[in-house]
Figure (tube, rainbow, N blue to C red):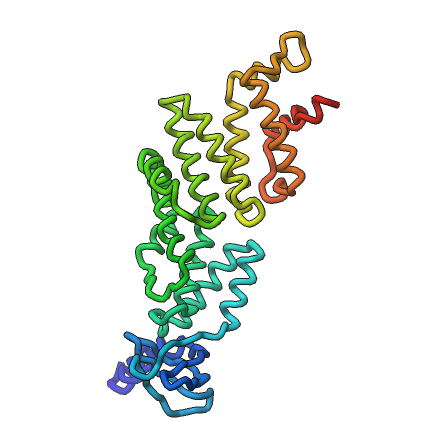
Length: 311
């Protein structure tokens, strides 16, 4: 390779990252009460580098002495990703969020910027698809400086529960859940905490069987805390509950005695059997069977729903 080719290659490599970055449309609010609608080229330590429009060849730079706040307008790439996310197409949404995060990385320390928000929602996609290894890796690299909303920042804390699930550190999960018992959280976060705690209690019950009731109660919190929005958690919690019911010897005894002279409607097994029947009925009515079909053993609980017995 001659010197000319080497220089050309070096120049191409140098400009490639710059070419991939997009300018972020934003409104700059100034201390004198005025504002400018601009395209932000770069943001570092409170200093904004921008141009006034697409054709503007000039660059201006202002800092905290002039700019009081910056508001980023929504960009099509983020809106497309969010539409996929809200449509529960999490794998597609994650790819689009990561694309947006890379495209606007030049402003990723600015308040409420779409690079940071995209990184956050990419992690949410991982969480919702139970990609806990991916979530753990992303959390290690995530820069949270651009997050401003309390529920976003608190979700980063809640992700500690998912890390404990990944590590199968059930004792730590149990402690975390108890520490968070009095904290104010969103419905989604409450559902997450309850689900993770349910997993911990279900596993701890292998040594202390009395904890299985607590596991069921925790899963039931997941079922009610965010029923319509956290569908993936509701489906997983319901499946785990049905698995517990199916393995319960007293439930199996209640099935054998169903409709016979030995049926004991005051027994724990009978109570759990009807709970399982009601849960399956709810699962089917809500359409969750389309998200995750019930297995044959769990579907059999349908016949033990309370109203079916009364009929």
